[in-house]
Image (tube, rainbow, N blue to C red; front, side, top):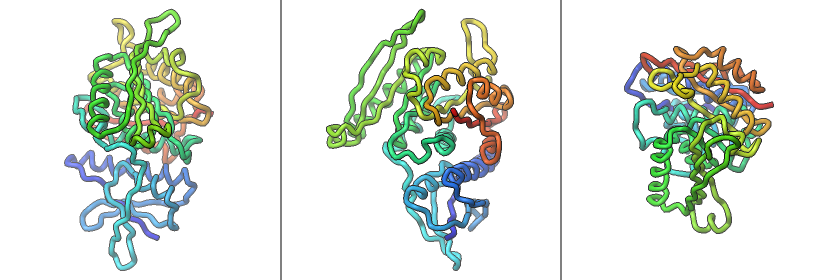
Length: 338
């Protein structure tokens, strides 16, 4: 059976080429997770870019993950007579795709790229084909793009950040959206003690898509913690998260700070890796994206290895580098906790 998946359009021609590469990388990661030996190719059909590949008919579960490709907007069976027969893209849809897209601000991570990282990180983890929801961690969550993407796909989400204002905006957005979409939910505030440190204030939600699911205990959790990522091992149980996905500071507008001094991005990457390693489950995985103009890929790989992770630096897992804008050339590294 031959499949054709239409890539999403983009007004910036240069970035459109980046999206083509990223969609191919994501597809290859998912196919590898299922051990399906397929070599997809990029073809132009009717003047539009498609990912095309041949494979035996997929199971419903396999097609759900493959068709959810963050860079694609349409999928079809490409028959021998040249006709394209539309196929339903099932994906893992739990919550309307609005939370990750509503807030617009300078420096916001592209939600499609975040979904790609979530899909690829899951694919390389031991929990790639787990039926139940996973727990997704963002150790520098900002206004919550990664957390919202995780929730939209039916996963538990937890994030920490030093920016109380950003967390408050994420909290307010989620609260309004849950009411608008009539999701059963409960919001709670907390204060977590940190040894020899400032208490970490937190906001947590329990939510469910219907009254029936709520009564049956079929809930998702969403947590926002206001604190430094280095306290993660003190405020979260060890081995409590399945995946960690984070966008490291690009060093263009924002950079990590330590008091009044700007810490090196390499040191910051090491702190991220060490904290995430402590709270990730064995077999879990981490994805860190970064700006190659300000942070060397080798340094990220070294930080992951020093923390105890096993980085994946072979194809297709080394295919995330792409141009974003004049000051940002983005890349990402995946690694697994053995």
